[in-house]
Image (cartoon, rainbow, N blue to C red):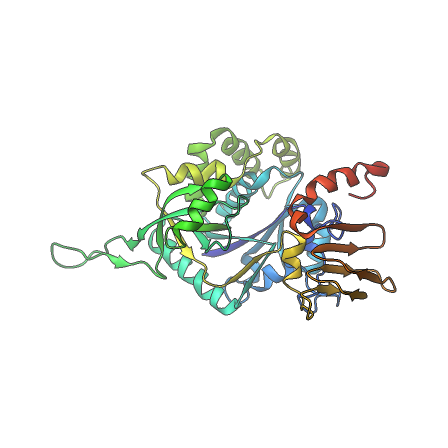
Length: 385
């Protein structure tokens, strides 16, 4: 059967001070996303969950995130199933645990993995593409699928997919001596190499080669749960064995203790480094990329969030009470009712006011916000985390 997993374990420090440790960005209601359960806008998690409506039934949609965020997540998604991590150990641990738990319930499970920090539109076209990817893995159960995005800049923050030819499906038995290969649904491309977060020169070369050769890896995947677990055992045997021990306790009284004891000791490594790069060099593995020719926005920074908001005539993206004079290219946000953000003669800044913290930084340095977050989080016993 078809299952879906939404990864919701990120901290979202690049959207500080709106995003905090207690309420990370995927749970914050965001203006620009329409009405949500709070009336202040939907959260990114609600957006991700809603995209699956009509594609995967609610009982087979799962959220994996921090245990401490379980209540806040289920307050927004009361019908969702939730896998809680005692602490974050990066994406390979989260996906291995989730895949193992799903496979115990359904050994034939085909699991799609989605992120909780992206905007993807139109949603109907996205669902049609994912449906084709499910069909591909149903026909080719040993394959791994990823979804690729055409790069619009030489970013060093994304993994890149080096593309090969279109992938036919394996031959279906037919009368006669020469079975004919079937066409892959949706024009899947073979991934020749997965290149995780390259240096600036390599990224520039990949973008120059064009989207027919290189795509960004979107961080969304699809595979048979048991096939993925086979590859984790092959490439990261120690992590696999530990997770298998945890999963063996699922449904019983020993599960919470096994999870709390073993999970925090797991190797901290991403699925990109732990499996995808290695699988792309493994002759026994087929990786297929489905080009995501849709609007795809990674809401991982304030400039990206500004793209959700309407721009004024001077290119300013605003939310809340603002007064901007002779200013251009700003992202200006006030989340406190009755507090005005006022700017005169400012250009290309991010200005974000919340009840207990105010951020001001050049727009071009917004990706460096983790540096400022570390300094702010160290103050007053972690009050500003």
